[in-house]
Image (cartoon, helix red, strand yellow):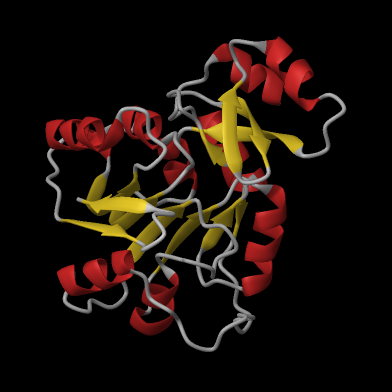
Length: 240
């Protein structure tokens, strides 16, 4: 499957691709009680801005890319628990995804990474950090993965492909934090085919920087609404 999809540069809306993602890379929302390490949600700045923007709206739809374990620093858990939102959580790192499954989030979850191209690809990951696309350099897999247990090859799909597989194209809040590939992922989105109201983008590791992301977002019809960071500088997000 991987060799065919990644070498043929399959279109992001290819029906076979969508079916593969739906059957193999999506897990339905859990119906079991939450299994969280904390009984209260420490809402971060992104959540506060989104909640205020939507005036405490209930039953909204979110997509969080870079969901980690579904709890720590989650941008969507508050909305899910206290505003009855649901949606899609995407986490590429296998160990993090296993932890995410155990939280029993009330949203579809996916163990896939977002491709930086408008077609499927493979990527090398070191722990939680996105390392490199591999479709143009097979030797990269040998050089970085062979004999190194901390490197993993993960399957990546265009963001739009995963949305189609999950039957989600209207999104209230899209949280994007994918370790430096945010700008490339944004460029793959067919903006005329999706309706995304609010987006937060982590730009600390983006080589184009804040100005590059802002310029692109303005080109596709968005304007900066606010900025969020923590005191340590671990993350810096702009909300559009």
